[in-house]
Amino acid sequence: MDLLTLSQGLDTIWIVLTAAMILLMEGGFALLEAGFVRQKNAVSIIMKVFVDITFGALVFYMFGFALMHGKDAGGLIGLSGFFNHSGVDHISLNVSMDTYWLFQCAFVIAVISIVSGAVAERINFRAYILFTIAMTGIIYPIAGHWVWGVGGWLGKLGMIDFAGSAVIHGLGGFSALAAALFIGPRIGKFAANGKANIVPPSNLPLASVGAFILWFGWFGFNSGSTLSATNGSIGHIAVTTMLSAAAGGAANIVFTMLRYKKADPPMVINGSLAGLVGITAGCAYVSNDVAILIGIVCGIAMVLVSEWLEAKQIDDPVGAFAVHGVSGSIGTIALGLFAEKELTAQTGQGYYGLFNGGGWELLGVQTLGLLTVCAWGFGITWLSLKLINRFVRVRVSRDEELVGLDVGIHGVPAYSQEHDFLDIDKLKA
Image (cartoon, rainbow, N blue to C red; front, side, top):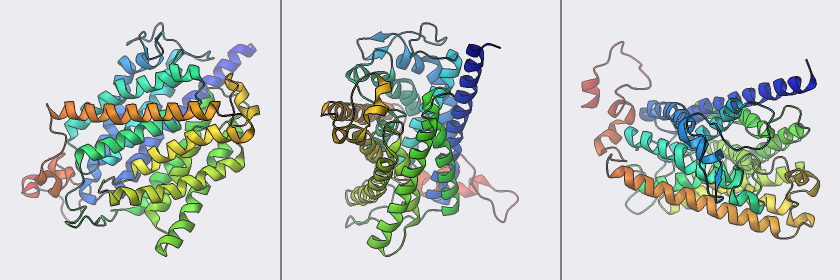
C-alpha cells in the first residue's frame, strides 16, 4: 500500500466517523428539546428531528448540495451537480465526493434542528416538513455557497468561518428568531400585563443528557472540519472547543447565582452550548485563552438575551436564538479581533485579528459576512413561512395546542403510565 492510498483511507475514516458524531447530535437535539418542552409535546419534538434527518438528507442530496458546491455563478450560487453531484466544485480533497457529501449533509441537518426548537409546541407538522425542504434545499445551501463554495463572494473577500458560527449557527439562530416571531408565543406564555409566565421543563435530566451528547458531537463538528485525519491542528481545535464550552457553562453558573441567587439549570445547560457555538468559527485560529474568553462572553450574553426576548414577548422555548444566533454572532466577530497570524496563514487570505496587529480587514469582512448571512436567514425564513401559510396553516389550532401536539397531531402520548390500552378519541376530546 502506497502513502497516497493510506492517506486517502485515513481521511475517509476520519470524515465518516466525524460525520457520524455530528449526526449523533440529532439525538442530543431530541433529548434536549424534549426535556425543555412540556410532556404533552415530547413526541412532536422527536418527529421533527426525524423530519430533519429524513427529508433534510434527501433534499440536500437532490439539489441542496449542488446549490452549495456546484460550479459558481457570480459568487452567489452553485449551478451543477444536481442529483448525481457530477461536476461539483470543491476544495482539493483527498476523499471521494460521497464522503464529502456525507459530512456536509450532517451539517445541514444540524441547521434545521436549530429552528425546530424555537417553534416547539405550536407548529403544524405538515408546515414544518415544507419549511425543512426550504431550509435544507435553498436557504442554507445558498448562504453556504457564499462562504464555503468555490467562488463564493464572501469567501473570496476573505471571510473565515471554520466550522460554521455564522453559516450554521448565525443563520439557524436568526431563522429561528424569524420563525418564533412569525408563529407567535405559546398560549398562556405571557400574561395580559406582558409578564412572562414560567413554563417548567418536563425533564431536566433528559435535557442535560441531550446537552452532553451535543457536546460530544461538537468535537466531530469542529475537529472534523479539517477534512483530514493528518491535519496537525486537530488537537488544538479539540482543546479550544472544550475550553470554550467549559467557560460558557462556568460563567453561566456564576452569573446566574449572582443574578438569581441560584444557579439556573436550563440556563447553565444553554450556557455550555453557547460556548460551543461561539468557538465554532475560530476553533482553529484562536488561542486557548481566547477560547475561554469567547465562552465566558457567550455564556453571559445568552442569559441577557433570553431575558430580553421575554421582555419583548418573543417565545423561544429552548433558547435557540440566544444560544445559536447570538453566540454564533459573537464567535464570528471574535475571530476578526483575535485570530492569530500563524494560525490563519493556512487560509491563504493573509488576514488576522485586529488585536494581534492584523488591522481592520478581517473584522470588516467578518462583520459584513455575518450581517449578510443572518439577514438572509431571517428574511427568507419569514418569506418561506408566509408562503407556506397560504397553503398549509403554519400554527396548529388552539385545541391541538391545548391538548398537546403528541395526541393532537400524532395521535399518541409520549408516556403511558397506568393504562395498557388508550382510547385516542377520548384523549382528543
